[in-house]
Length: 287
Length: 299
Image (tube, rainbow over all chains, first blue to last red; front, top):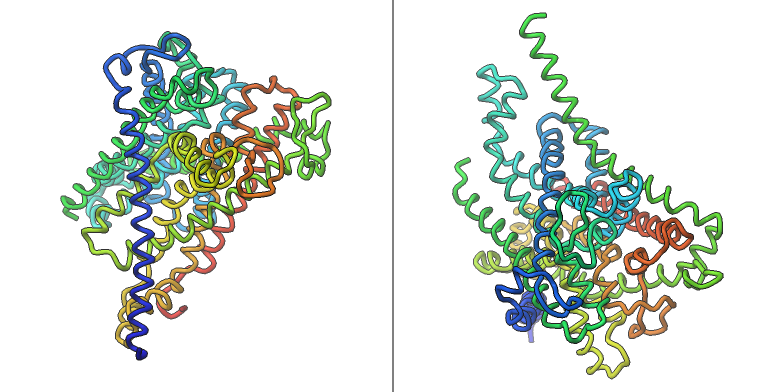
């Protein structure tokens, strides 16, 4: 075998290994989703989606958990969206690179890296105990909101960056002030991108468990929340509770698979919507 | 005051208002530190810092209680180390595939796959580890329980791979085209170009990706809570069960009486966990700024 053939052989082997790694990742996702789907789809029916749990959570449905996750996610977005978009506006439109911006960015990066259970402790210490909100939708939403803040900032910044500089210059040249330019020109152009990114934040907030364990999630409530100071059930916590803490872990397996499937459908559905929206936007983008 | 002046003051106030909102992230980070310390420091009235960090016994509910978190720290480190052995090769190689080798049509499928993997809720991955991976490992290796270091590491790797893969891909993507063309023009094969030009050029980005992936693994809670087994002892083999720090906090906080020593100890564990991940993130930040690839000449 001459030198040339040998090099080709090395390349073929290397590419084979590289390709396999991509195949492994696809397989891992497929196996996980496939398994949960096959085991879970039988548990899902109208009763399951619209009834509260019954008989010490061994029968019945997950309606209160769906409602709880909806409220918590909505609350988180209400907290994170205005703050996130405003931070991105400052960083991309006003800030001049320097120590201040570098510090803010470092803060955002590190906030993104804080473990979810530490967010839970923070929520417990600040919202539940110190501010006296108790274990409630309010405490949980605030905790989740700060958790997804970096996601929203990142997405909004990217969307603002994609707006061409000429838009801003045209507006300023017509006599618009900086704020008028941002409010009437830059934000409308960036809005689809910002919304897409925020959808990813929704998916993240809906699936988190550890931050709501001590701040919002109830083991079991039969009635729906009537105010933001009520505890709620939530889908991720419900899976955890059924799978580890129940007295009938084996008998409720089908309910666990069912709940997991509902949560996955929700989170992946939200993400797929964002991915499709983004692809469409890129194709349509005129600038 | 005329109209122009009013406008100028308005603009000035708007800018300062946005500056304030942008600092919220830092304020939250500071509040996290403040409340961890506020609720965690009182434990050091009953246990010294050294005994807390290096004590080998964690029996928080015994009388008298033992608050030594060394087994928890070791548990966290070991699942992170084993999971990165799986996640680093998978993440980096898949990034090379997506960025350098895959055809555009394959890329269009692979990138969403990685994103969806990243989006899977951790509780679902933990659940999968409990009901599928645990019985499987138990049967294959003939061990008493499938809830152990190996299982937790595999599941954690599933969570770290997307982080590593997408960040490494960004780094590879940033390598300039001329570098590749120059290498190919000199007669190098595509693999030689990738292994000796593209990867070295993106090394700082890839390192950042790996560190952030590991940081994600060390702080991940639900997976280790559900599949690591929960034994608060220093493990002797990779088939032993462990109780990493996040698992201990999440499992025990519900039962710990409010503002008892146990409660304080769990917050103090949170402090250790927070500063470990903060350390990882600061190193990643340092590397990505210090060794930033500037132009083509610095290779």
